[in-house]
Image 1 (cartoon, rainbow, N blue to C red):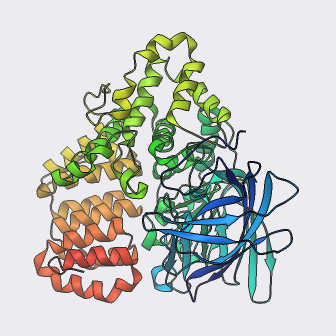
Image 2: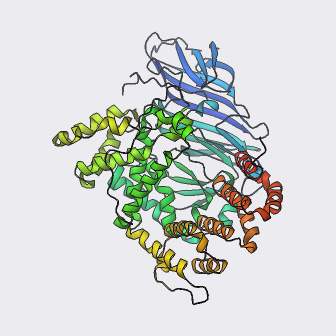
Image 3: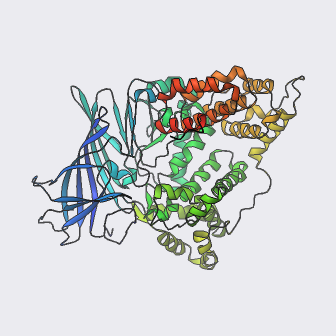
Length: 622
């Protein structure tokens, strides 16, 4: 592998073509009292001959000193501040007999305000007794908790030794090797042998229990979550392992990460999206759902094990190589496990709706962010965390669908995917590399590939060049429509309409049905909603949430406390904010709503608190 190809990233100070980190060892103490991590980062570096300096990324780190890892001699370093993306940490490299490599050790500590480290109070966890720590690097915030070359162009192996008090367990995006037990503290030892980008180095610390699912997967969660959302079918169903094996055998090739564990997050931060290997961090409501719900939630996370973690974009202009590929693969997984061709039209419509929603922003937002709304945006003067929210990655999904169609369908394109992930495994690439490889793999289809309007796909902000044919509704949705019509037309003075379809609906279909009912809520009554609840026996939290919104819409006073309890117990922004918004529209219930918020707000994550405060006090500026 050529470590020194030019891979400049506008969001990193690193110059990896001169000196590059190839391995990182973290030895850190987790200090919940001060809300910091403190310890050392030991970096193994490869460099060009005569290069005597490396530039790292840092933001808010307190650098205590830098030494030569072999003899402990101090190395000169200096920090150059930059308000946009942090600071450059410049370290003079030691003179060694090996002119192309060296190892340095950086002693440092983080700040309590690191944007990557989420320190939850005990009240903000499910169990309510111990705090919780989770890192979420987003795209450029790994530099806020360890010094690194914070660009996806640089991938490195890493190990870690994390010291915590004995009541905590540590998880990382690496394989757990052992635990060193002490009198008051334990040290968790991890090793990641596959090179990963800095954003994929993730840590979680909490009072976590473990339940084994199969040889490859265990579930980690607070004990309260295991008991409060207990669903025995989840632990006996094999769908997670089946999805992994299907992706390995038919779509992506070998799974390189060893483990696929799942950490159920505290409800207050349940909506976090974290892309990393070995462990998936996801909503605790995963285990309340049936097979379809588990598949719908995890398919995207599983696909990221290859698209993003194994093969990574070179910089964030090419992030579609992560996002669009993972969408493409995840929908293939869903198509296989959720009724095959019956769901195909639904998935295509879902993609179009997601893409169109980006173009329905207010005009002032559209004008400001217009230049970002293409698949290969110029991000040089924008923060990637903010800018990439406007990029239509569904467009890349439809490009891949188009390529599959013209190149011979899944029979030929899926083997191409497997070869793509094999050839570029553990590498960071750009769009030109992907396109060149595509041409190489289909030499007899060059004329067809030349006919693709590449500039339009990548650079235009208008509608996609080739629209999929989406006529009518999918058979998968049709049963939902029939039930909605049946319930809307039901005269509650007569007997409840009997249909065979409702007994056969999976959880994802029930969610679709409730969303349709929400669109026609003016035809609903309390009697109808009560009958619906009795029929469905609502156990899934997502279904319960949608049902509660309908209860508020029909002004079902008896369910007011249920709605408030749900919002404040399952206080993730995706649930709490819509419920409080709906309750705000129920003017006579404002006093009860405000009283409940004031009583329970400490359970919420601070951003959720701010959002709800703005809902109930819209005229007060924070």
